[in-house]
Image (cartoon, rainbow, N blue to C red; front, side, top):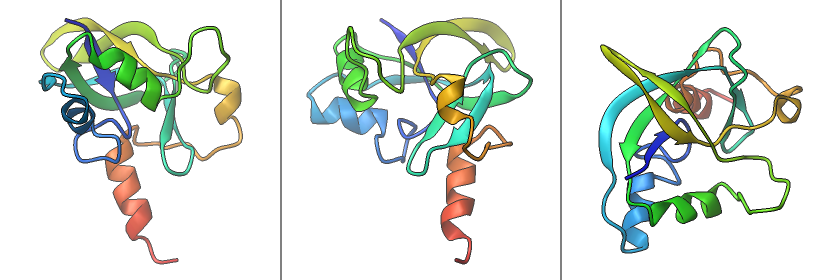
Length: 139
């Protein structure tokens, strides 16, 4: 079963919650293996974040899930990843660091650095905490 690292709207409780997506398609529930981090930078695209996974200093926080193979095309659809087409997100595999454990190779959906160049950086690397604070800030 594939491992997936989710860092943004696919996280539990977020708009594209991976668990909800699986249930909606009649796919077995993903199994959370815990949190993890990848080296890179996180940017605010408005209603979702984008991870630039270029090995730059910084850690992006997310969750590692073991998923049914049938869920991968659903995730591709959510992230608008289509074979043979240039898209904002791409699907790749990279190592994800875990507290107290060996890194795990996970599917992940990063963006190209050029797409995020003019956007605000999420310094904490944590989309959920950042989004909640941003959305509660007075206008």
